[in-house]
Amino acid sequence: MIELRNVTRVYGEGASEVRALAGVDLDIQAGEFVAIMGASGSGKSTCMNVLGCLDRPTSGQHFFQGVDVAPLGNDARALFRRNFLGFVFQGFNLLARTTALENVELPLVYRGLGRRERHEKAAAALHAVGLEGREDHTPAELSGGQQQRVAIARAVVSDPTVLLADEPTGNLDSARSHDIMKLLKGLNQTRGLTILMVTHEQDMAAYASRQIHFADGLIVSQHAKAA
Amino acid sequence: MLWEAIKLALRTIRRNVLRSILTLLGIVIGVASVIALVTLGEGTTTKVTADLAKLGSNMLIIRTGGNAPGPPQANEGRSFTSRDVDALRAGVQNVRGISPSANKQVNTVYGANADNVTVTGAEPVFFTVQDWSFAQGGPFTDAEARGGDAACVIGETVRREILAKDDVLGETLRVGTMPCRIVGVLAAKGQSAFGSDQDQVIVMPLRTFHRRIAGNTRISTIAISTNTADDMAPAQAAIAEILRDTRRVARGAEDNFSVRDMTQLASTLSSTSGVMTGLLSAVAAVSLLVGGIGIMNIMLVSVAERTREIGIRLAIGALGSQVLTQFLVEAVVLCLLGGLIGIALGLGLARLGATLLDVPYNVDLGTVLMSFGFSGLIGLVFGFFPARRAAQLDPIEALRHE
Image (tube, rainbow over all chains, first blue to last red; front, side, top):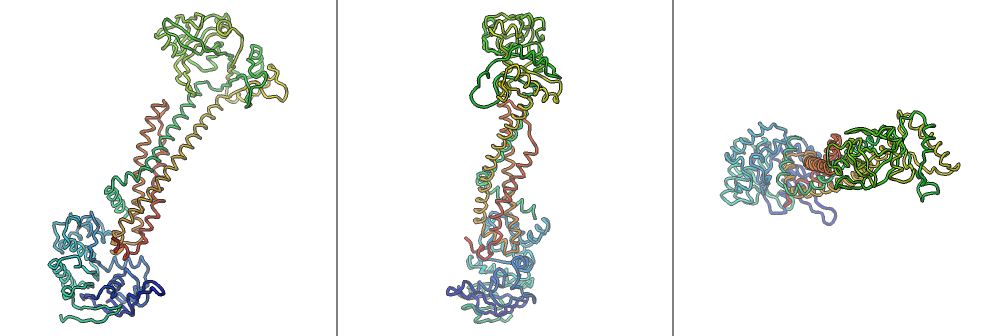
């Protein structure tokens, strides 16, 4: 479903040039749960940004369901993110002083859904991540684990094809981390949601069906877990 | 989408009430001053025009002294004489009345009360020419005028302050050294456009005035009212010709008298107060500009503060144009709020000012709507740069922003 073909991403020019991705080839099938690992500076985050259409490769092709999305303009990529992707970040990135329900509604606002439909879908998404009854709480009134659940609800409320999670457990303790991973694993299995997750924790990567290791802008090893 | 943006903007403004109010101050002051100044300006113009109408319509006022600037010339201050008046009576066409008069400030006494009053010596036609009406009694008669009788007409202030009673016809008051019988009381006219009390007056026959008050036969002013407005210009020309002859003005020399058209004076005064209103409004417009810069400043701060929020919105699929709209709407809503407060404040100030200055309080809806629209325009103009900056943020950078 997703193919990267000889993707490079170069920052800066001349002597200060940094090759964050040095020609990456990657294939991801629908329904996979992929953990992307590597030391900091290995290129895993850049790869994630490219996969999430937040960043544009310097060269190479990025196919999504057979379409090369690498050359698309800003607005086209925004629409692509809106319609096919969901994001979960390490720092939760919820809107402050805005209720959980409103946070989850946000992607639907940009999709142009009516108020009633937004409410229903957002409430259902919060229910699915186990936060019913917390709809009116603001992020400041929720624990880290709960905030990340809100973020996951926000990411999946628009029924994306792919969920991109950038160190989703980076700010959580071990117990909370495992809860979040179980939630993601559940979404992967019950909905067939394709999940791409950056992590540096082996325990978390173990939930994935495939692990990819980055070093110096290249994929150095991949191994699939026997299903 | 727009409605969502407006709701979002209102919420953001509510979260920073104090900051929003301080930001709006410039707009509020600007709009309030425009509204107050324009409203008071209109009121003043209306009042001046109405006051001048009270002075009489289709009226020409002839005074000694030329129109030319500079020091007085020889002959210039010379008064008019009955010969001048007779010549005018004979030579000017389509005239409703020609009224020569002279004035003097005279101490006037009744019982224990005394005050300085402008005493005017005139003929009965004076009241017709000036369009003055009576509250009690009427003008002195032609016979009284010819006989130089001590009959006088008093203004409302004289009745109220010096006589201090309602029924004054037939009473005698002392004007200077002369006792004078009251035959009429003028209807109140209030303050003139120049601020003097038009009711602090006594009018008596010109002959009486000359003999008993002035001690000479000088005439300082001749008022002429024509039948229609169209008769004004020919009358003005005729007057100039006649008086240049009777007052012996050499060919080519400046007039040693002036003929003033009161209607002209009215329009001059109106345009003067219009210019003042315009100038003050320009100052107010500068304050609106400063207000706009304030808005831009605070919107830039707002964009910087909410960089992460913008990043989130962009990541989950907001278009640059949607982010632009959001911040633009916020700036416009902020400015419109300022406009509303400014309009309320301005109308309040105008109301207060109108009461204090005793001018009519006429709200010009057009000005109000224009100020409101202009506030929105300021939001649009000064909000655009910060909004565009928000829309052009790189989502990755924005998300990383602390």
